Image 1 (spheres, rainbow, N blue to C red):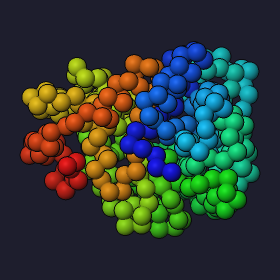
Image 2: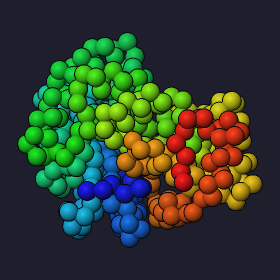
Image 3: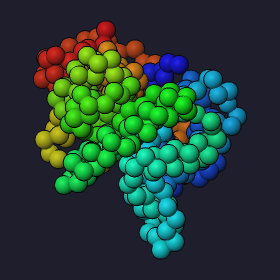
Image 4: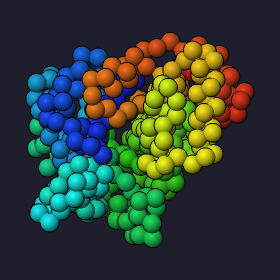
Amino acid sequence: MSLGSLGFGAAPIGNLYAEVSDDDAHVALAQAWRRGIRYFDTAPFYGHGLSERRLGDAFAAWPRAEFAVSTKVGRLIESDTASGAPITDGFAVSGSRAVFDYSRAGVRRSFEASLRRLRVDRVDILLLHDIGRLTHGERHASMLAQALDEALPEMARLRDEKLVGAIGIGVNEQEVGLEILPRFELDCIMLAGRYTLLEQHASRELMGEAQRRSVDILVAGPYNSGLLGDSRGPGATYNYASVDATTLARAQEIYAICAELGVDVGAAALQFPLAHPAVATVVAGLRSVAEIDSAAARRDTAIPPTLWRRLQEAGLLARDAVLPS
């Protein structure tokens, strides 16, 4: 099924950085459904299963044929009663831990646990989560070897068993995608923060290679970790850390041109990636009714084509960027 132009990124309802109540999560998901959002992306890592469980509560009330869900493998969630920190792995959860596991058995175990939490008998997309040098550093070579030898073949087996519709990777860097694509056949890649209104240079090769291979790109992190999320001005974070002066100045230039033309930067950020022929959808992290209403309005806002040309002329969009019409 079509994923639609806007997907619901479910990390925030897994208590990303701050607690969200069950009731607030359920209300948010109900509003997403009302606003026409039909694709939901999650992972066991998000709240150590909490995001998946909350989605499962919503899925139980919706016709299965009318929504799509992606989840991920590559980490196992284990009980850890010694873990009492208020924020664990970036999530406001305690009593558990996430451990990397790219083995065949680990992939199968993770996937089966996700099905139970999501209360479904299959998922539309299964992604291998956070493979790459950015995550694993000096262990990258050995982790990649195991992913190619064990994790990805097991994911393909799940696809063959009709338990999964499509397989891919979910990453924050293009380099590992370029390593994997010639060595294993993927259906899609979820790329977070690298093909956005703010930046295209760090994804150019991967976008081209994906298009040549007919691999769908699922663009996540369209606001670059909040930098472009506020209609009033740039946020304080980029790439999950405090924004540097150079990147902030670039964002300020984008805001200035959008303001001249009366365009909400968030709307431009959501709509820009969709023009690229390799992009299947844009996934934004959402946690509240207000955020969902804002994202839906941004999705539906008409943007004058002159905006894209102005940004390109100012050197804020790549010369070869595919511009929305």
